[in-house]
Length: 95
Image 1: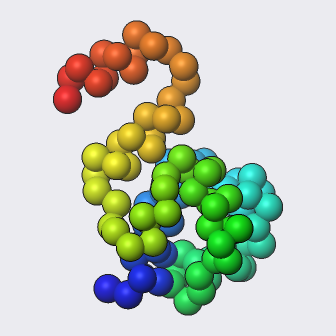
Image 2: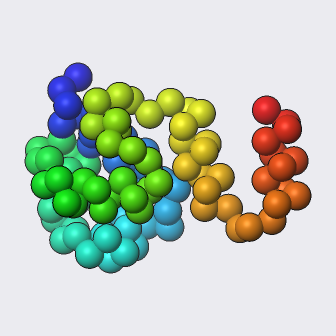
Image 3: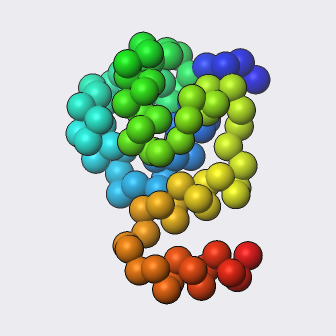
């Protein structure tokens, strides 16, 4: 799979951890049409936009080259859980 394809696939996966793609675009201040180009693998963000996306999802730039694993997606999802230390600790020990 091409770099654009991997990035687009990973971006689509990351967006499933948010309420909607519209909300992601609004939070990132990225045009929805352009964001769809990223997700479909037709376009690649400029470095400053890539940095904004990585910071938003709390991932590093390796999402460009490596497909996200289920474990990585779990971590991204857990980062968005409400801050209930006991709950996070319980989930982490269940693994």
